[in-house]
Image (cartoon, rainbow, N blue to C red; front, side, top):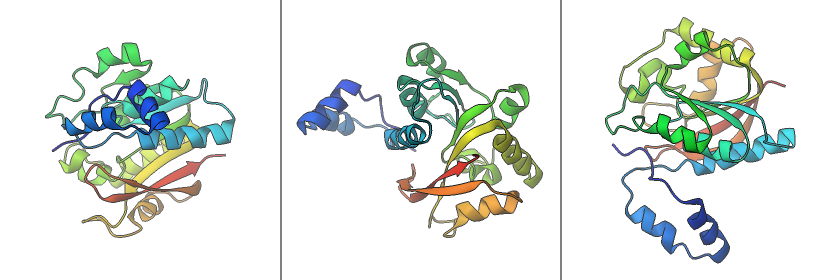
Length: 222
């Protein structure tokens, strides 16, 4: 299973945008071994944060399930203070083996740790928590593997802890009309485990790593 795209140089991307010559980018895509860039999500989050705060510099971000770190890298490059975590339970491609070394150059802090363990050990508060393609695995296990399935009580506790530790916004991506998930699953998931939901704003749709559309939400704490 392919899960992400190789590194794309920012110079190639800027040149393509300005010149409309996408040949360099296309050459990267032609060599693609993985599925998903994630830059679209990073820029959508950065745009929304800037609109809400008038700045990005210094905003404290927790990126849950950061995968190869592309969202963390983009937000860190834009001036945010970013911590990325991923339990790495499903790592047949070795996605996380080199990530700690990369963080020295990418400017974000990485922990190979499960969210429940991380929140129990780390008392920090965050301006924003990014939870992309993660919550629906809490019931099924990460990457549908059955690994680290949470109980209903675990999920309620995790959500309550995240809400209490987030000053501004949680960004939440969830399945939409995907096999195994009925339409509206993402909102119903939250209602099942939360007696009092924060304000939800739709940020549109994304495409998941399996090619199916996902809903993209902002949960505002203020």
